Length: 69
Image (tube, rainbow, N blue to C red; front, side):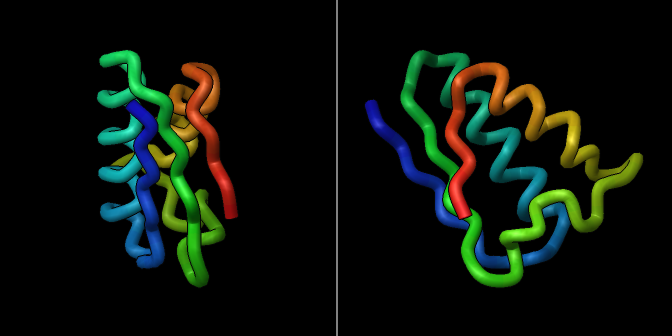
């Protein structure tokens, strides 16, 4: 199945959860695109120990997920 996740909120927790959800879908064999809109376009803003955005984004892209802004 082809899945599109739209993220328009800059909150690091929301971006982190979108990436984690995308990774779960990729592991199930779905085609996933995450579209970052407006203030969420800076995906790594807020990356840190609590919400490791860079780690999840790397896993997402290495699993052939598509990030678009």
